Amino acid sequence: MTDSKGKAVKNKEGLQGYRVRINYTDSNGKARQVERTAYGLGEAQTLEQKLIQEYKDKKLVAASKMTINELYTEYMKYHATETRKSSDISTASKLQKRVLPYFGECRLDKLTQKDLADWKIEISKQDLALRTKQNGYMAFRALLNYAVKMEYIPKNPLTVLGGFKDVTGLSENSTPEKFQYYTAEQFLKYIAAAKENCITVTDWGYYVFFNILFYCGLRKGEANALKWSDIRGNMMYIRRSIFQKAKGEDVETAPKTASSSRDIQIPLPLMKILEEHKERQKQAAGELFSENLRVCGCERPLRDTSIENKNKAFSSAADLPHIRIHDFRHSHASLLANEGINIQEVARRLGHSNVKMTLSTYSHLYPREEERAISVLNKIAEK
Image (cartoon, rainbow, N blue to C red):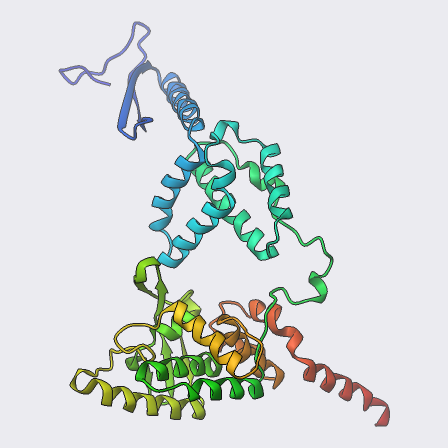
């Protein structure tokens, strides 16, 4: 510290003077600064630490009065800058359904582990899939982790309690994800029923859509986002996905993960279907046709509600059990698994980021591999 003439300022004991400044944000979100003077380097360092701690204490006291609703509003603004739009909407939905109804008006300083334990008990009683409960827990934990990161609370009380667990004892003997799927024979019946309902170009779009799901294992959003420019020769290049918001708004994003951007060879039956449909669109659109049109929806992606309605109608017409749209992706993987296709290739076609994910879902569908293993072992004694 120096005076107006640039000379070092010292106290009576001859100790050098230091200005200690701390920048902080007040409870109204405004940038503030506090400045104090200390003499001697040791005293200056001690003062700095004291001011930092005082700021943290004040911040904790102010933030502790924040409600979970207020924290949620702030968190979602931050979350929107860090994740894809679809993930942002999904997180908001989980918190709105599983957390805010219970803790919305609760202040952070009033949130106890007992409250959180009671919340877990209440959610456990509900007729929800284990994964749904776990997703709600993870969204809540991330919300409170944000509060810790922002120094609103010293630690996350939910982490100590842990997530929801399978208490049925069935998890090791059943698939982690319950799903249905169509065999090749069932799908041919299903798609034949779909073809019988094709009159307009839009009708054919649904027919093509379900063929793409089954033959390529795409996610719904990936198939719906597909453009003719994404198909070159016998290859399909997955580089986009469509997320449909309320009021008919479409949001085009990159696929779910980096590994979801993938190149898939198109099987011959689907190649023929795509070629015929492209000619059909060309005739209908005339000079307005372009490679930028959606494969299934033409100018606009097919609507989610209409896709599900068509799915129910086709399964009913084919006298087959109704399966979810995502289960067509499972049908693709199940068909390959039952034919003994290497699990790494199945994972690649699905766009899984980790083969473990594919194994955990589809490993039980490799019965022929077990039979082959037993056959090899049985022949040992014959040699």
